[in-house]
Each structure stands twice: as C-alpha cells, then as structure tokens.
Amino acid sequence: MNQKQHNALVSLAVTYLRTGDSQVQTHDLQSATKSYWQAISLFRSEGQTTQEIETLEKALSLALTLKDIKNEAASLNDLGVTYRNLKEFQKALDCFEQALQAIRQFTDSDARELASRRESEANILNNLGRAHGAIDQPQLAYECFQQALSIYRLLFGQQQQITLTFFNLANLYRDRCEYGQAIEWYEQAFSFANDHLPVEAAFALLNLGDIFLVTGDYSRAASHYQQARDLNAFIPQCEIAYAWVGQGKAYEELSQYEQATSCYQQGLLVYQQISDSQGEESVNNLLDSVRQKAFYQRLIT
Image 1 (cartoon, rainbow, N blue to C red):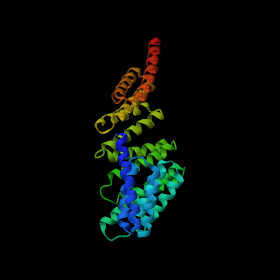
Image 2: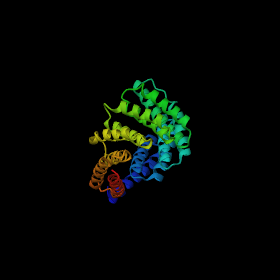
Image 3: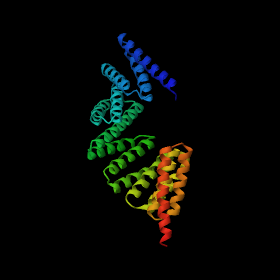
Image 4: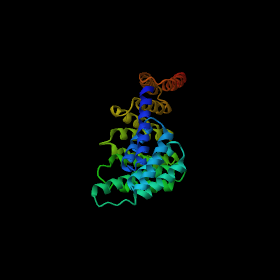
C-alpha cells in the first residue's frame, strides 16, 4: 500500500469518527456505535494507535450508556490488546480483567449467542494469560490458559483457538527456560494441528527445532526443521529460510560441515529471492564460519 492509499483510509476513519460524534449528539447511539467500530477497524489497520485508543474509549462509553455488555467487553478487550502491543502491560491487564468481568455478566438463552459469549470469554482469558505472563505472573497466566482451553473444548469448531492456547502455554514455559514443559505443549500443538492446520503445525515444528537447538539435542533439531520445511507450501518464504538456517546450525554443531554448508546455501538463496539483505548478511557470516571449520577439519584428518 502506498502513502496515498494509507492517507485515504485514515481520512475515511476520521470521517467515520466524526459521523459517530454527530450521531451521539442526535442521540442515535446505535448508529454511533457502528460508526465508531468502523473507525476503529481502519485506525488499527493503518497503525493509528492514538486515534484507535481514543475511539475505543468512545465506543466503551457508549456501550456503558446502552448497557451493551458485548460491546463493553469487546471495547475493553481491544483496548487491552492495543496497550499490550505498546508494552503497557499493567494497563492491558486492567482492561482484560474488566472485559472478563463484563462478558461473564452476559446471559442469553439462545444457544448460538451463549456459544458466542463463551468463545469471547475464552479469547479474553487467553489475552489475560499473556498479560500475566508479560509481568512475570506465570501461575496466573497458566490458570487463564487452562480456563480458556476448558471453554474451547466445549465449543464446536475451535481447533485453531485450542492450538493457539497450546502455543501460549508453550511460550509461557519457554520464556522461563523451562524447556521440558515447553516441548510438551509444542508437541501437543503439533499433534492437534497436524491433520487440519498445516500452518500451525509448521510453526510448532519450528519452535521445537529452536528448543532442541538451544538444549543441545542437535539431531532432533535438524529433524524438526526438516519437517517444518516439508510443509513449505503453507508457510512464508522467510520461515522456510529460517528453517534451512536452523537445520544448518544443527548440522554445524554436529560437525557435519558439508550438510551445514548446503543448508546455509539454500537459506541464502531464499533470502536473496525475497530481497532480505539482513538475512543474506547473517547467512554469509555463517557460511564463512562453517567453511573455516571445514578447512581445519580437513587439516587434522
């Protein structure tokens, strides 16, 4: 997207915002809510964080006035996500806790509405868990993720969200260098995603490769990077390059320098194809290092 298109979308968002303000003045609050959410979506997509927050706060105020619990929870949840992206984790935590409290007040006898409410509750719990993890409250994070899992498993069609929660649990342990637990959750994510969610399956394999590389299990690291590459039709080219390089590092640690060189060259080729100069530079440095090691290996054999 060029600058002209970006400016046009921001201008459209401002128009929706002003329309919403006018509708509030004429007490057309339902229409104002719709206008605000249209503005929020555009501000978010165009990276206008300050305006997104301001408009979310207006949407929240309207939801409170209308006693619209669903939009109250949605506004608070989205505010939490925005603050989390800004690394203002305590603000994010406060918003998620308020969103959770709001959505749990929602009652509806309609089965579809009830399922939607429960899904929203689980989504908020996942966000709340990530916020707890960010401020080093792992036990609270774990409890939130487990509650989210319990809800998703009661609902139809939540395979992707269940897999996401497995990733959240794995990342929680990985960030604390508790690699055994992290491996267990990444393996659950892979097993659950393998049949129907190839993208998620590939990322589980990449993460497992990373952990095995860090923990010195180089053969398993190489194997998992290879398996991730076998799903190359479903993952971005940059991740394919990453897998090649990871596999190369594993072979290098195993003193299998010829295989390492081959993997690095394949990774370099992908980085060149996608014009990633930083990736190219990094791999060229790795190639220089592994060629030097191979040279010394030949001298002593």
